[in-house]
Image (tube, rainbow, N blue to C red; front, side, top):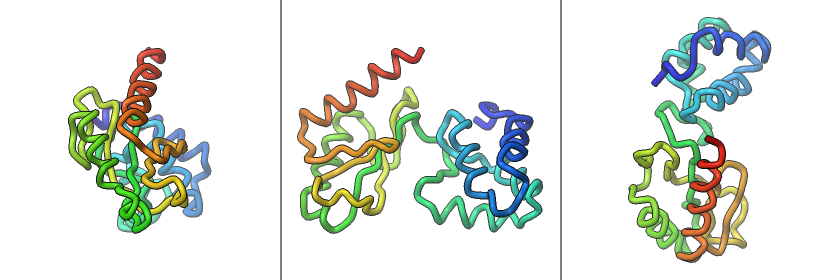
Length: 163
């Protein structure tokens, strides 16, 4: 899948962001966004390490520390379901069940059309809306089966409009 993003594009991102160690986070975010698969491929991580003259382990430290990064391909829309204590008490497991049934996938999986990935995340500060999910920067709370179906429908339809 690394064919989605070309070496020249990665080099252009690095050049655009600035070839400095301090730019590692913003470079990796830009690469992930440009990938089309919501992840940073191993090939790109090696290229970043080489271009910034830092150890590959430093790049992987960042990629594995921050929940926003993935080293595996993900769907266009990453559905993050909060697993913190307040959401757990507010039945986050029922939100998981609603999304898995609606999408036909398990946590950590991506739909066959590469549109959605389900994953757990840490608290993102919307405890008053629990159970809560985040898709991109948008937060959805007080989830019901109807709300979940509507959320998924909206993203599916929006994706069709982009084609």
